[in-house]
Length: 546
Ligand code: 4UV
Image (cartoon, rainbow, N blue to C red; front, side, top):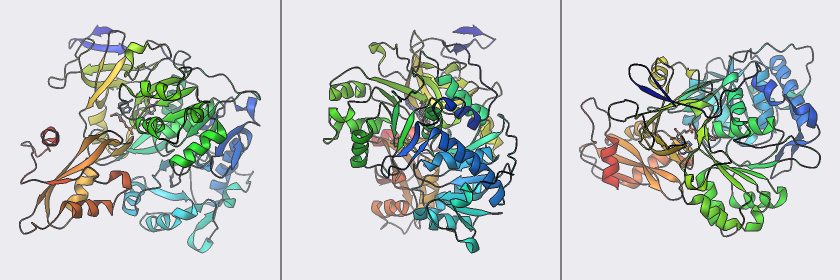
């Protein structure tokens, strides 16, 4: 650490030095070494068995990029929306689009039509890639989009008169189409995050942001992989969604880069997950705390099911201190590492990770700063750097993995990234004498349900649309399984005394994806506590609920 400047800023610097980032696009980078293992499997659907080698998936992405430009009206710089579950073709859809110079936004396949409409309108999507099961929703949303070009229906049939193309029109070679030059500084993806406040916003991540974060994670002190061979290849089982930054960059792109075999599951059920453990014998699992808890507690998951697993990565939500101990107790062996990462959509996503050498005494830590990453911890009341270990405050981060900004929202961008380039995370952390970080709380209003983002503002504005509601506030309530669950405080309008908590819950449930439901209930109040500027005093509500 070091001190400088008149405000005595205490800047923590990564212990792992700096990374050199190649001047490549995300697609060039992801397959940069794969010529050595072209015939090994890259992606397999754990349910249907559909499988692609590294050579095949790389080739399909190139063919797909040319076909995009030849068979659709899309031009480089246009945005496309992916509305897909985790299928092996996700890779092809994203990287074909990126190589065609398109910008990709990913939607949760569980989203309702209004949720999809808001995201795809915000991102100005001109094309949706989906599957037959979600085609109707895609078509409904597409009618609300300006300059819409076409829908691509993977695994289904074309309907030219409705501008629906089949997958074959993306896989027919158009060799005379020249691919545009994509620069590493170009925006690659728009992922949606509510940041510290408000409704979800488009997070602009460049090719370089995404490539950098993978390079930052490859430091041997942090993660230890060797190149795949015919004798040994890592097998990664993943259910974490590719539409989230964790699934997209840390799993899909990173694991393809190192030559691992990714086994995907389109829709999580414990039975399918267990079957994939048995059939594919994964060596690596990516989890969120709620999934790790399920593996520990589910009566049908036996130590034998987990016997092939050598590495586990956990992130996206706080991990309770005892969880790793419980896991080792369950598997009955200790030749498996459990790493924890901390990060956000806005940081591509990783900021810290636990190194392999982390002593047991530090369990519960989310690890140390990645290479090329700087951090400060500032006091929650006076905003000054806490300046010493073991004192908590808001984490500020600086590094090459930080987003370009929020799409069409310079105000939110300048609130998130200050003039000196520090991203204000909205997370409360402390670091110990050895600069290991611990996440202890959040100042931002974000709620995390099983690692999924839930924006209280989004739910509040929904509740306000309900007849008889005068005011509303939503907070997260701690939950042993999900981490947190949304709860609403609601003020009724005069004359609407008969409105029940269940009616509010049902109203919300009919309009949002399941994980956003008001599962922790609804309580009626005479007034929502607000400060003089009208801001909801969420801490007062948290005290009411505890
Ligand atoms: O924007 P987001 O939904 O992003 C994430 C990113 C997760 C990952 C995944 C793999 C990694 O290797 C990695 O480093 C990070 O979830 O939500 C960001 C917020 O989630 C909370 C925290 O409040 C972030 O601001 N969060 C994420 N990771 C942790 C966490 C963690 N390890 N412990 C506590 N809270």
